[in-house]
View (cartoon, rainbow, N blue to C red):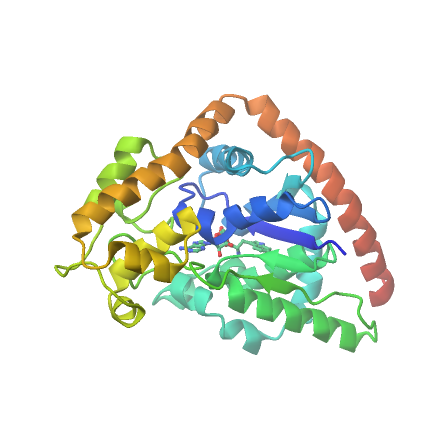
Length: 333
Ligand code: TYM
């Protein structure tokens, strides 16, 4: 039987190589399997958990759609929509927030990281963010959720919320506990400036990430400036594990070329970083430039992008409203 796939990406600009290798590349592969029903959501409601400029948000929503399509998701075969246009998401989030326990949410590491030292000043939305994510997933009877490693804890929470709701209302198997689809390797791409930090949109330095809109010169320059160590390239897995920046760069190379990590280690063992970086840049330019060129072409076609979202939200709304009706019945509304 085919899978029911759902995943989301925040429209907060600067979609990067981490988003691509950790999630979007996987979306494309799953959506190419005819047996799967795929829904990819631009999660604009999640984006506003931190302050957004409305004009930029609107353009980032379109850019996220453009990135999906440029990466190879066919909007005729998969549903692409933005979360705010299907009101069931906010409604289900409220309802599920009454099943979720505050203790569960307080353990979420992403909240702790994003809220920083001054937790009292973080928005309530940032705190309850994973509940909205559970609503996204559960409304569509999703069986599988492709994400990067950083979302694993949120998916475990989603399963707990589903189970609690089902138990509380004696509605066995009403919400389906979804399986995360997290790649075993390369599911956490690190910053080019610090091998212990996740590559992220919010990192101040643009040199820390390869954006999917970067051109060839920018990519080459960023790889040239990527942090390494003074030793030659590592020659085995143990050595690699201790050298975080080398591990990240070889991981990126392996993931992009579909090569086993061990094979990549052997290929570059003992060589200079400069030699490896040149090859890595070439591979990156080869894989990312076509996407970035296509994104800029698509960005000029605003009506086309808007029509994808409109059509997608109509389809998504049909599925979500049906589920919401049943939720009302279960609750006694
Ligand atoms: P977001 O927008 O932060 O990231 C989108 C996807 O990219 C993955 N990702 C990474 N993977 C590997 N290495 C990295 N450095 C890296 N950075 C980001 C993320 O794991 C994610 O898969 N909460 C989600 C969006 C969301 C969602 C959902 C996902 C909302 N509702 C329902 C799945 C299902 C988020 O903020 O992703």
